[in-house]
Image 1 (cartoon, rainbow, N blue to C red):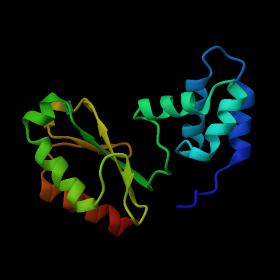
Image 2 (cartoon, rainbow, N blue to C red):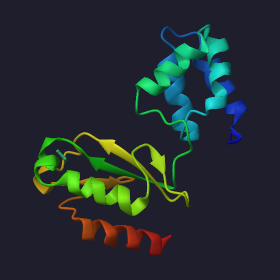
Image 3 (cartoon, rainbow, N blue to C red):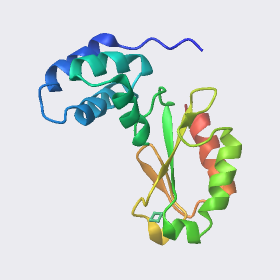
Length: 158
Ligand code: FES
């Protein structure tokens, strides 16, 4: 698959402002993801050469931290809590339903670009487990049916 275009100028600007700091790689990767929404695979050689690292080192860090994405995010991100309280209240079943319903696994984006799916470990909403968050809004006591209703409402309003 041909790689999508990415904003080279932005990446160069982030590198220029951070590359002389000690341990610059993580701040650079965060800066790129905060700005572009992901770390384009095509930017890895540029990051490596500016930071005097090998491509394998940069790639290794991107894949080690699940937080970093190498594909553009969907319009909205759905976070599913996988921590203990939510698990004890059925989040595994919910998680299975969400993946089926959206046709994606974690760290993937739906074919229409509407939703990305990410795991999260406690949303601070344990009293209302199982919980999910869509962008900044937290939803508690989410059943499969409720998830479908939430998604329907979001789709209708966009
Ligand atoms: S364990 Fe899921 S919100 Fe705390």
